Length: 442
Ligand SMILES: CC(C)[C@@H]1NC[C@@H](O)[C@H](O)[C@@H]1O
Image 1 (cartoon, rainbow, N blue to C red):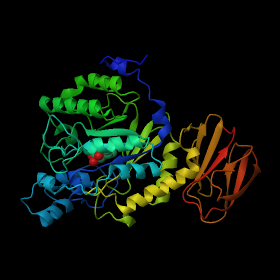
Image 2 (image 1 turned 30 degrees about the vertical axis):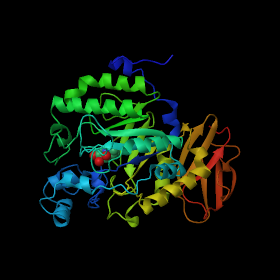
Image 3 (image 1 turned 180 degrees about the vertical axis):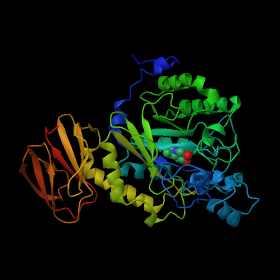
């Protein structure tokens, strides 16, 4: 009999993270919206590298923050806007410019599956308030204006047709259609957020629309939840769990509740004792930034390193792509997704369906990073940041057979003290981390 949740925190606290969210490991985040039309932000810092203060907001590297970056009245994006569109051009004027002629959700979903993703999370309404889905509560949506399509519904169907889970992102506490003051310091995200009960009801009602119409496997709320609506949260989350089998929610409900924790670039905390998710773009932005070209975004090797280190520490990697306004996925992003998929096609056994090993990640004296995962009694060892050419590494406290998952790795191994010494003779033709299986090694 399916468990029913009754609108209380006590009932919600009995919810367990379903196995699929532990098993899936790798997902694709999609930030696509009005901000994809101007597609501009300065290339500055990763979130968490510098204080989130006025300087951050005036030089925000997030292209999806375009409205606020102009609204602060200074900085590169403000100057770019004035020069490109003129002082009288309003953000809403991008609606009529947003044509999605190259939006092919089936092709998107096929690419995500080829990338080895097991789930997808799509932004349905970012902080700018424009909805990518038909809503009874506002006409500021993609069915009524601009694209004239249910962008969310089209991709949800395509992703599920490829056998992947579909999640939805909603900007709960921030909606710049309701609160227009510029955000110039971190607390403004809460103190200047939408302070009315009207907006709290709006957010509650739109969230119910998303739950009822799309049944998202992940309800990914962002920044926080309206203070005036906190007392409704147990009802909303109970409604979600009662209507979405095996649904999960993140930790951005004012610290009141979560299934999994979230990291964003270098911002946030994670520990391997609790399920968490790493969220970042391939560059410094989530929304497409036209000046963030191939040499400014993560290499495939670094992305695979991030996946391996995240998964070996009980996390999932939700890697963002920022499509161009017309629906084209930028070539540099597509190339990286396909390469990650090639690596996972060979080494995915060490990733998908695994759990944290009792062995913690370590760095060998030669600088090689050693990450572990387990699957029942089998151990997986992943070597990262390895040197070019031949090298040796000792895996401590290990014995028995060790087998490379990639047959293009040429190696030997031998007992060495209480561990195993692996001698890699050649690995040039493979990309990314080198994964081994140790049957019965956990
Ligand atoms: C992790 C991702 C969903 C980011 N969350 C905070 C937002 O301000 C940012 O634009 C982006 O959506």
